[in-house]
Amino acid sequence: MKALRAVNNYLASASLTLAMLIIFIMVAALFLSAATRFITGTGFAWFIELPPVLVSWLVFPLLGPLLKKGQHIKVDFLTPLLSKKNKEILFLIVNTIALISACIFFKAGLDATIMYFNLGQVMEIEISIPIWWMFLAFPVGFMILALTSLELLFDNIINLTKN
Figure (spheres, rainbow, N blue to C red):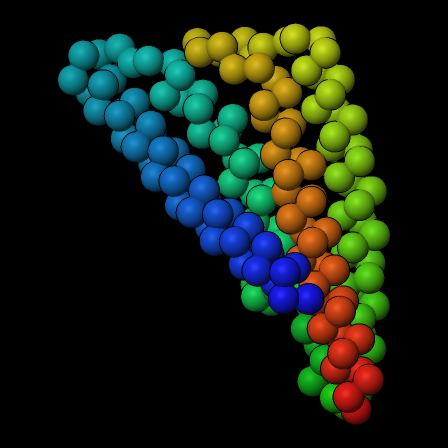
């Protein structure tokens, strides 16, 4: 459990650092695009095309850390009505579903990444970025989510056995 928690903490830190870097790059690219167009009258297309390409790398690696911190999108009308034991059972069910879903989506993302890698296609933008690079965010993100869900699932089981 300590090893899994250490790996997940490292992955969460790396994901948050990556997210901050991507947001900086997105803002800088859009600012530079506007500044270049204002100063020269023409701009570089890749400044505008870069942020949408980076969105998958912003979103998917953050799935696990956001689930662990409880900052993902959720409807929270049932938990205030439940007892502590029933909340643990509910969280056990949620984390089990998250683990199963993450494994399924990891496999699908890996298959898509391998397919686009084998096709050798690149995006039709000003800078040549292989399509598989963008799809690689799916299996990476869902692997992080699976590991985080597994840790949370173990925590749920430990908490249920204590009560």
